[in-house]
Length: 312
Image 1 (cartoon, rainbow, N blue to C red):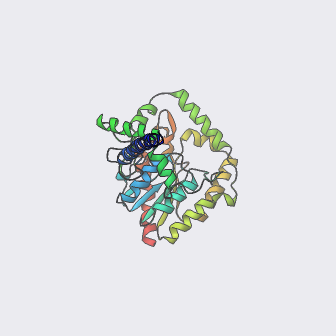
Image 2 (image 1 turned 90 degrees about the vertical axis):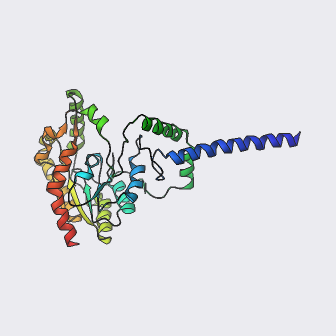
Image 3 (image 1 turned 135 degrees about the horizontal axis):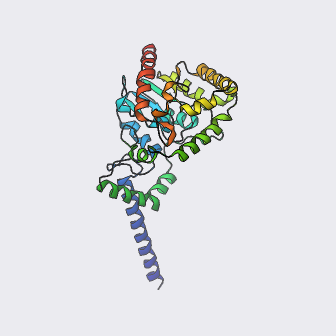
């Protein structure tokens, strides 16, 4: 009886191991996040950080764009002077940008850093998000039923002919999002504008200690012989007009002054003509259109980047 029970337990354990191993192998081969570089079908989920961390190491490029989603919409293939990889991702803060640069800016000639007006260190640092995964993290990813769901979704959407959410040059596919925001929706537009006014309207003169990660970025790139060019992206004209008060202008001027003591090349487009309402989606005053990003990068940033590279 004991031998029979032991045999049954061993059989059950073997079956469980086969199932777990099969699921892990399935997820590893499909690789919906492109964590392991095995993805051949396309990325169909929200996985900017994981996928870009893989593609930035394999996609041939001489220049890197980093920043948040505002920089993430800029098509690298339309930029002049260098071959770009777009390493920007939604919600990126100064700490995440630093760690991304630390791991993946090695041989590039220039890094273009998008820094929103007034942006400083995050209130609660989270540590290195782009380091090699631990065994536990890999096991959790490969044996997770959500990963199975994403793997199946990857297969079905690929077979249906759906485009990948991300290109190998780091560009996000914006077609679905564009359809959602490039329409008349005054209520949603005004709600976003009011929220943005609250965020920027509370801005105060920054202290010297709030630029820790930007100082680390500047020093790291200097040590590696990579030119750094900072661009402060334009803001929607309606927001710019709201923020055009003596108090806020003085605070932003001090923020810019401190940023310029860290980086030798800072291009401030925050209150520029690029913020014209027609340059933004009708229901989204936070994100300029991709062609606008291409325009100001090629016109304003690339000439400075060329000079910065020549001086290195």
